[in-house]
Image 1 (cartoon, rainbow, N blue to C red):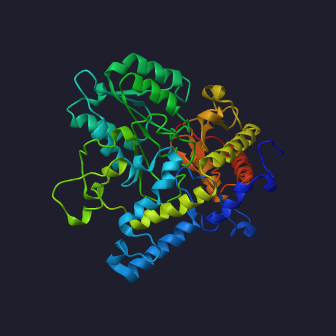
Image 2: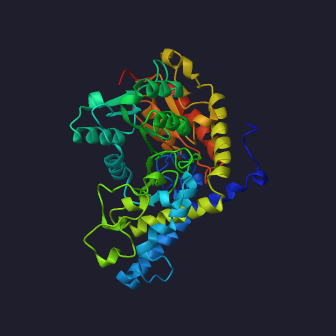
Image 3: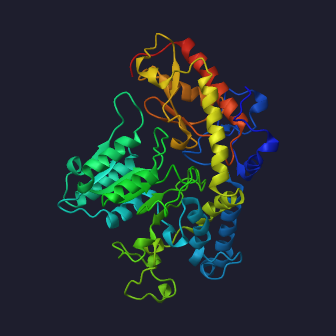
Length: 458
């Protein structure tokens, strides 16, 4: 289908970066229903919102570090053949991370894992008082965020049912209106100690307006934190200028650093000398760190929150991916390509005979057959690379059958029970042809599912 959103190879220089990644083949992904001539070609991988594919540079760098470990042993901490001394390995990624989130190097630290970092940040920045003790968040926050908030509230002797304000979409809607968030801040602001949202909502793909929400919350005297797991490397961020207090993120989604890879934090420079409540030796001044002094002397800024030396293998895996981001010109040009790819995916989905407008989804009974709707906002500024698809009729087992059919044909997305499949065309390595094939296969599978009939309630 011709589309103004699809670029020709001559007008799409960023498409060259696909060659920087290893994309599994259909055979490797056990796609049993593809034609024999397609078995050894790359699958249609639209799952970078869950786990990014392997950057070739990451593979090379990890292999180099294993060789340094084998040949230099402990001396790799200080005498490294590739000038990546392990003692300072995190410093190799801090400049690019700072650029991606709109911060100074003082304000970022590559460390830990997302949930551990979130608990660490809340331990410092959630400071309940008798009058101001509530946390404002979305009702369907990622489970780890919900668990962390509840555990922090309980640690202060408070009742989560009272202390946590969870905002839900309006009846019949899937995403939160910014106006409803701002109204809640205005209404409850004097009782809110912390506003904590995700930058991109993992289930719906909604991008929250970080700058606007942060401004409103700080005007009420609230601390403001963000979980950027689905936002970093996906949408432009300016955390320093937006006056965010803190943020945390993982690096295995759009940052392609590998399964369970290292996390990172942002702490605004106004907190550069904040006392560390959970100090560790890697947050100590590096000039005296190995003298092992008994008294903690923090590094100024976010890196003072470091607790343990970072995993070298995980850090250089991240470095390999960040080098690709740097060479691609950073997030700004990638965002332009992302908007086009995602819009092209939306256009093709809307052209499907199975497409149901989101406002009609609630009344879709199954008498019409099967259908699919998009619950991610249509406004480009309110979404990233991900579109979340709900399969209709809901609660009738359509989604698992579609997911299985896609996988058998080499289209890789991921699911969120009971009815959602998430597809994410990532601008660093996905193509227009990936989008076309993804939708063509989806339509093929829906024909099959519809012909087999709809199951009973599940």
